[in-house]
Image 1 (spheres, rainbow, N blue to C red):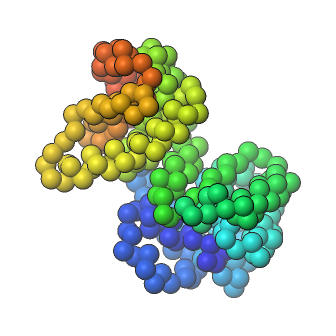
Image 2: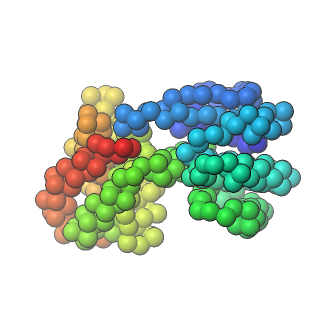
Image 3: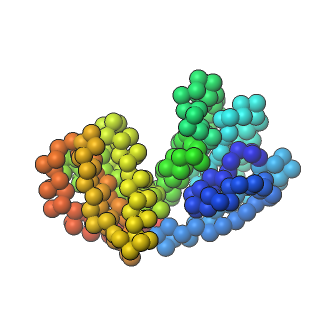
Length: 289
């Protein structure tokens, strides 16, 4: 849909914040290339104006889609039904075609910081979720997103990309093994763009805390590198023990973030990290193959 914030999402993911000012509506389709671990991904930004929407379906623009992000503006409840109707038409297109439906991720967008606890906004979100359950008859994911907290967008985008990889389950298995071996509570693997490649956790509290801390540490590490300074390891106590370490895989920077309630586990983390890094590197070598 037009004015739902699709193009703004892409600009934030590319760190092009200056372009958010006076952003013009997308007319038709804008195509850009994105590269993840050497694998080219083609992004299609579909303008949401009514004069374009029907042509996308009629002209088979959704053909060969592997991953579909559908953006719904929660701040515009008057257009919720219109948005859901168009989503229904897209889903009908896939049902009637020979191809399997794409992985579907729905962004409940513009859940801005001052609206997170707003009763009207939360009511709108719950209403949309209920209608989505009636509308969609296959697996899908929903995320609450906002451009004012770009981690919410990166997390959603990461989850979508992971759906494209046949190696996601292998990566998760390696992460779970490391979590058990080190008796840790939460483990995250991020790339230098703060995209989550895998995560494993035991309890929601440490997981949510790690999700608050991790992107800020990754941003700090990135800024320090621009000044010729590099973090070898960062350890701190924040309601538990947080362990942050950059690792290099295929000349690309990744970050391992471990949250542990037991400080004694830090030694085991350091001992186990080299073998863990090798396993992760092997899995990422052919992540999209």
